[in-house]
Length: 420
Image (cartoon, rainbow, N blue to C red; front, side, top):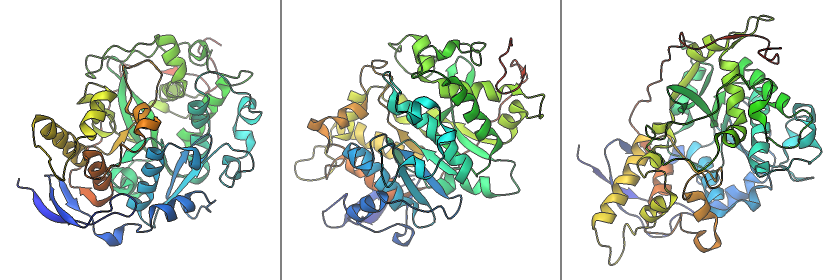
């Protein structure tokens, strides 16, 4: 299919040059400007630091422990672009854990939804920020509905088209949506970096109840894999060969502790509660709109061998301007970015667990030396940002189907140990 030439208008706060020709690759079309929020970056950033009322279930929730103004610049730009891309029908809320903050999570969620370690600010260990996010995401969806998106995520497709239209459509069975990946050979696990559901979702509430039970009387997640509610589940052990991933330089016990929020999901999806009849396997197989994470959020990782250094090199290549040489590296960068824009819903950048991989793009962009490298005009990184806002995908996301008949089902209450 031939690419079509369109005018690339300057995006406020992202590009400052005059309009220029862009060749849209196959699978993409240009979004009309009237669908976008056309406020400047500065205006949107100021708006994000204000508290917003909840008018509907169309909310995007994100969290940064120390607040929006303390996010790395590339993360701030992610969220500003969500606002611009999603337009006025969706409200983006960025909450924090800062005392007396205008955007404190406590303005939205009562302390009773959190464990003592969170409320008393006694959480410790290496993952306080990540696990704080794990504690706040589900109550927000339970109480208000919407979509949780991890702040380090590029959004390449409108949430309506990823999942929300189907969640709203009474003719479909779907009540919850997300992305899944093999965390054990042959066993798909839903990630928690993108979770969508309307308010009062029965799975969301039970999932959170399991997770906060792990935190009773403790201040960190060390040893969670041995907790009575989780110890019957095998340790996480991703099949790195199938994921095109190098061996993870981390012990699976600590990796499983780090991902205890995933493990809580695993417990619930394999559980039938005799006390109220809640059927996790049936809910998982029939009520969840699930798509493959290797396609929809980690595609960029898979095609680069999970190396942040390689991703950084490709995205810093100059795409346009004087002296641009369209050599092998340029062609590789173009293929990488065009593929991402047309064929994956999100690009989730993470920082950990530290040392698990040889490099993380998020760490590189966090550094003072490279904190503008995600947005230098004329680079493929800037074009990726521009396309994430101005281009629309034409492909259809096909939900996965699961055969759960071979898995062990636990007939217990959600907070009842297997052998208790």
